Length: 156
Image 1: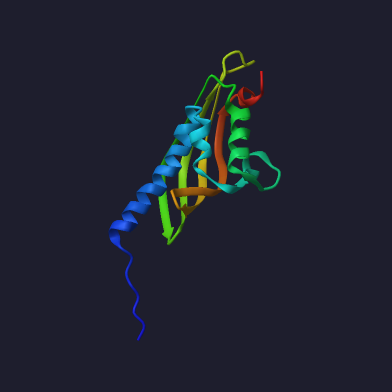
Image 2 (image 1 turned 120 degrees about the vertical axis):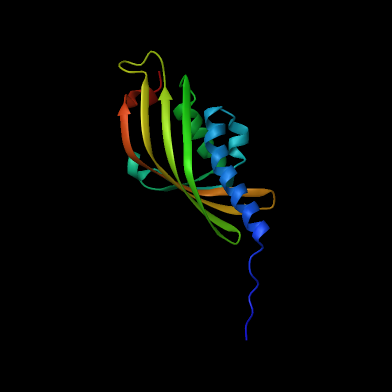
């Protein structure tokens, strides 16, 4: 007869909260332009899939390369707000999968047309436990709707 040990409920709760916190911090730190802390949330290699909203192919980047890309894409904006909500966490030992709704509000004054672009969709985030916490190793974003002026993303 094989016996299995049930997962420790306190550890499951701790892990679930740590994973949720990591995903929430991703949006929070991006909006506050804390590039160093944001880089620390990612694994050494990150599979990025933005094919649904922007085309192309999924790609593997270092965490630092991903954050530098975001810095280039949104660093020139006057403000951004990424609201991540409805965070669902599925744990599997040292791995986690998060699905979450996301709303993005991007603003740049001086843009021809409206200075705001809004969009909403969801994230599919994969994380792995590291020695010092959970790290994001895959991120897929899908946009369900958008309104406003996407030209705000263009560099001035």
